[in-house]
Amino acid sequence: MSFPDQNTFARHLERVAYPCGREDLLRHATAAGGSDDVLGPLGALAVDGRYDNFDSVWAALETNRVQRG
Image 1 (tube, rainbow, N blue to C red):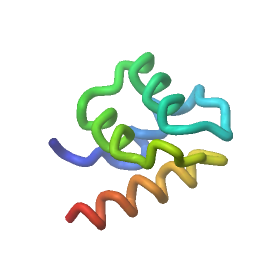
Image 2 (cartoon, one colour):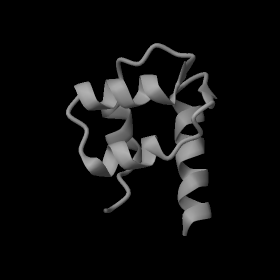
Image 3 (cartoon, one colour):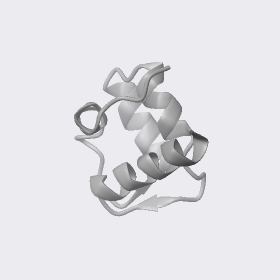
Image 4 (cartoon, rainbow, N blue to C red):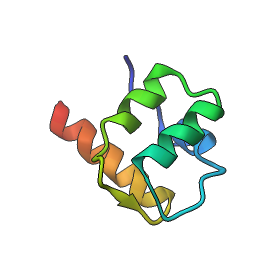
């Protein structure tokens, strides 16, 4: 599985109403046709995480990617 770029995530999350949690992100990305490459990293976000905007989602995704190697 490859890690999509920021624009790919943004496209799949453009209709998200912030603030939101991981389940909202997954629901919107799925509805937008997100592939496993998009849904996998979103699903790896903290269950209790709250995101105020797309930038906070992207920061969390990047942090997870670096930590997982």
